[in-house]
Amino acid sequence: MTVGVCRAPGGGHHRGREARMETSVDQVDEAARVRPAPRWVAPTFVTLAVLTLPWIGYLAFTLPRHQVTVHYRAAWVGFDLGLVALLGLTAWHAYRGNRQVVLAAAATATMLAVDAWFDVTTTPPGPDLVVSVVLAVLVELPLAGVCLWIARHGDRMVERRLRQLAVRAELAADRAAAAQRTATGARRRLARVRGRLR
Image (cartoon, rainbow, N blue to C red; front, side, top):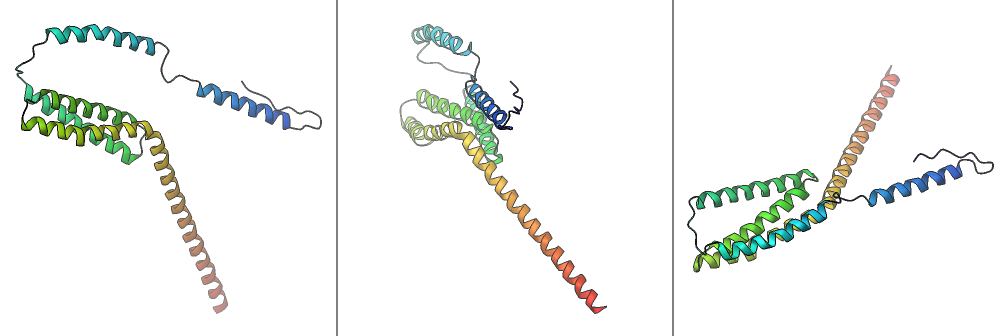
């Protein structure tokens, strides 16, 4: 909604300014009420979660307790390569101050949690299981927590980084302007000296 400037006697542009301010406040309130996802997402995903429960029960009773896999090594190496790629992507977006760090960190947290889960549940009892549990508790899950923190606070981190870059750019511009003023002053003094010598 566009509000024109009111030219009332004795009020000048005051009422028009107030009307524009009220309109701006209304627009901010309306923008704040915008949903981050369409309305169909919540009921659809609740339905999918509920429908998955019977499938989990079916798997719990029908899957074999032991299974020999043909591509076990390839599965783990491929998974860990994907994890490395996501860790690198998170680092790159964080370094660049890109808001996509939120998505990369969330994906990395998911991969780390899945890695910890399958490391522990697929390792047979013995020293290897102890190593898997220690890595899960001391490395993978804490790092997943850090990634979730980044995903939750990523926007603030990006804003702080952008502010730092803006301050650096402003300081560089101030230094360049000061250098320009110094050079201009030196040229003027030199011109005055030359004028006196003539």
